[in-house]
Image 1: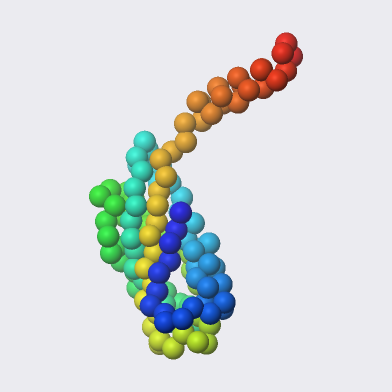
Image 2: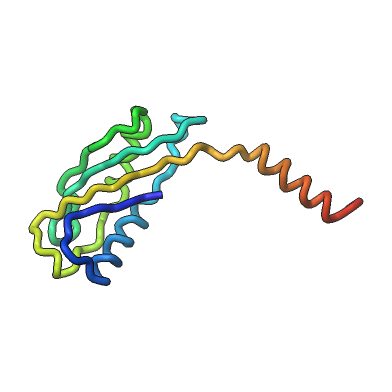
Length: 125
């Protein structure tokens, strides 16, 4: 889950849509180096009027070096960002995003549960 926050008085539909576009670009991927963990990191970044990334940094650490590094990389990979709508007056836009890294899924347990459901439905297949 990704939450994007930015200073704005009244949020128009255009600003809301723009924030959703940014959140979709920041879809977090679980870093393979941090198996069997979960965490949350808050990253702050600044965009210019064209959507170009000016800077980014960890604002609130997850407590895990892997998650913090991945949070910064996610913002770097998300470029180019969409240009902000005209009603956002700042020359540089300060955005804060909370990136939640879910625990890795246990595929073995999920496969066993699916097999049990299918076997229960099939009855002798």
